[in-house]
Length: 371
Image 1 (cartoon, rainbow, N blue to C red):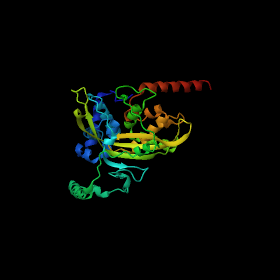
Image 2: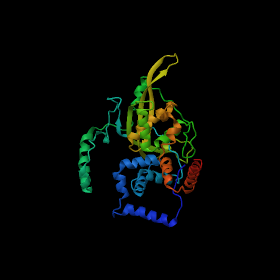
Image 3: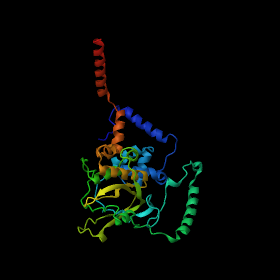
Image 4: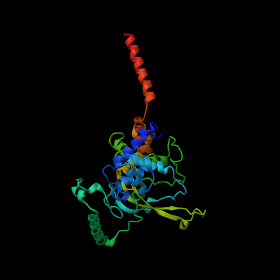
């Protein structure tokens, strides 16, 4: 369950809220939401993913209101999301239709369409750039002008970044990766129905993609290091924009040409490969690969990889490992649930503690009388 602030001394609470606003404004500088949206891309993507609502503008507002606290921003975004009407469901999105910005494979050096490094911190030196302290808007405009001129020269023979083939399709053609059967049944909706164990894979994936980034990463790391000692290979990681369509509400035929295009969302998608042994119909055991899948809003690579690891863990469901236990994983990675429960410990527990205190005193007094 989620916890929110309880009512107490009204005047004290009002003054506390004033002090909170003072802390945000005390240096006399107000951060523009557009500045947050343009300059805090990674934080925006994290908040959208954990908040389960794709809106860079709303994420920027919540980050400003929360003074940069991801957990508070996610709480605000989730609360707002719960008030929104759900008027339409989008059509099924196929990641093959992604307009790719970044696409790499750690398993294959040569992939169809080539490795596309895109924007990533992986190749930087991770040294503090102190010149950023003096950076101005004019510097940014000048740099962008030079970059755009350079890009026109470099990209004179562009690769078509739409509909790039999936790397793992070639493993399926060789029979090294089982083909995925189509499942046209409606997925579970965790925003409308409470989670029931055992869960479906659609439920698990929804919870994982909305899970707290640090928690998902930590449990994914635990699965690699200790609990099962899994070591996957990233078959393909791709980041790009997916088109979203909704059916024409005035046409029951749901024809493709009659669908409405409502925009694009940027996502990170990861498919990881796990060596496994499969038994064929003739009893022969062969080595093939199992698949782990992760997808998140925005550019959120570490979380998507960790999500794919946990997806595989929960599919295997080995009882001896906590990272393979769906109740352990799924009930403890949600940002609002976990931070809310921890934070509620700050709220008044006078009655319960006094009861415990009385029990301790009586127990100690009883022991003294028997001495």
